[in-house]
Image (tube, rainbow, N blue to C red; front, top):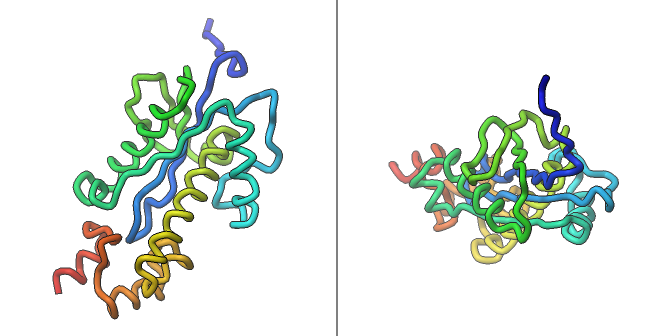
Length: 196
């Protein structure tokens, strides 16, 4: 006979990341423990929500969650570790920064960060688990806000528009202006430019 976990009786934390694919900026991760007594309508995978919906939901998540945290891995960490290990590091930092320790960590994707807390990776978890969806919203909105700050520092790359993703406009700006401190040197388009 299997043991069934009553998820409402244990503190479950959802974890997700944002910014694995961009050529610039840090990767962000968020960890969220939702309060079953204070449900949030409209939670979904952040990629399925509009920017406006995400910006509306993020403060609600922060207000109603039992605990939440956002953490980052820097461009330097991405370049020295690789993007997967840097993402797991950001996730671990987010979980360990929670003001309340969860009993179970549910992570979107294939891999779990090593936090010392039981964890499970769930493919497409941001569409299946409310706490992961909430984490995806916080990770994305926090990273977007950071990219707006980088835009102020390096306006000619257009970070405010593409958030560092390899769009045609971003690649053109890279060719024209070269690589800045915010770029990930280990990512191929940047690496190839530096090799020229």
